[in-house]
Image (cartoon, rainbow, N blue to C red; front, top):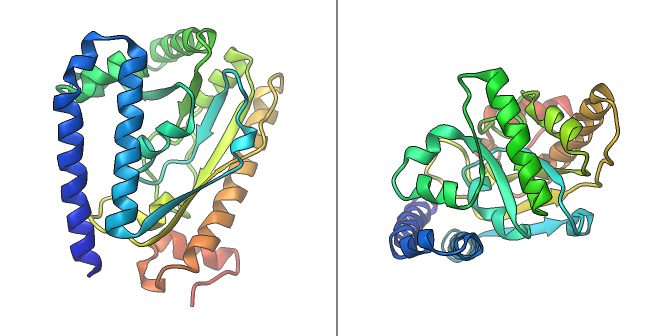
Length: 261
């Protein structure tokens, strides 16, 4: 039943996404805010389908920690779910993405239309300078900057691998930083068709004010984010079979003396 429901959701998700891209193509010619509304609508539909078909719900905690103005949001990245389902939780997010995505027909064109921050990873120094300039422009426009500092999806419980770009953004933008923890990888595992029933929790943590030294900020951010991620992993582990957890998650729970039985 799990595999059947997962396959049904995958079909519904990709058909829906294709329809949004094709039927929404005229939005490429309109104002950016129209395209952003289409992006949020796609996320709402995909999240609803996930709940109805796969039984995977969404719970958002700490929304009150998001400032009314621009901010830097530093988020864990465990699943493809993160790339679309987080969109409606913000006013007007600009996501830091790899530059190669812009060459994908329709999808990449929309990434440019959304004015996301597209970063070339082959030229580190030049890319960092361009990222900071683009992020400053988005902050001036009042937008939130969303970055996944590990750069790619990592299994729940995996050892963190933070890249330094988020520290440069914090230092250069002068806005509050909101850590964002989640446990999406338990229910939408990377490199897997399975979509497990349960509740994906997204937790906005208390903002870190601007002005810290780079070293202090990095230590504070990573400590808070990893501790919150551990709590969400332990919570999620109580709702899924032990053999459904990724090996990294099982090892992490053992380290925390919270072995899933």
